Image (cartoon, rainbow, N blue to C red; front, side, top):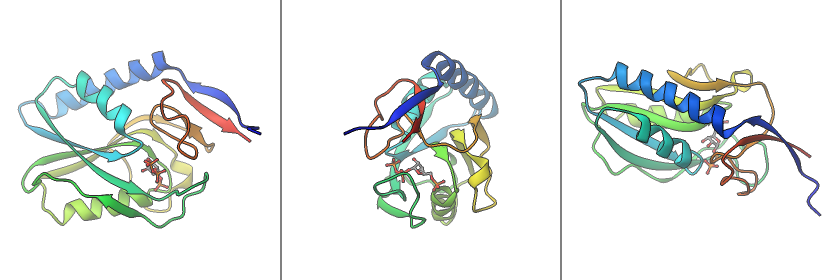
Length: 174
Ligand code: PRP
């Protein structure tokens, strides 16, 4: 029996407005440059799609697949890359796009991985930032919303692979 209940945290209207603001800021900051957005699958696929369509400068896109959660709501702490990027990022402006920054272990792993390839610049854009649970010193350069603790789903985020499709973001309670 599914005993999961959920409470709305960010509606699709609120999300859309904030994505527009982030895109405007990014377009301004990178004006005159060619940006490569790198999405971290799976969670970032919806945010990435929304963000890139609001950015007004030319962008290229790539994806990596990193996972740390496995089944359940707690990070295993061990980050695994199952798909690398396919673009050469040497001397390029790179913006990592991620749905959520939690312990930061996934992002730290990926930032270190990309830095070894000598990009011209490397910044991080996350839609949700759970700062309280951070285990590394890393901070995102662009943040949609900072949030307290709580397990969130929707807008790409899952619980056991469910709820990714939801246009709104919910906190789940079990
Ligand atoms: C989630 C999320 C981030 C990571 C954040 O991915 O998409 O990549 O966890 O957690 P952290 O800051 O504690 O490392 P997950 O491992 O659940 O894979 P998914 O993107 O395929 O859902």
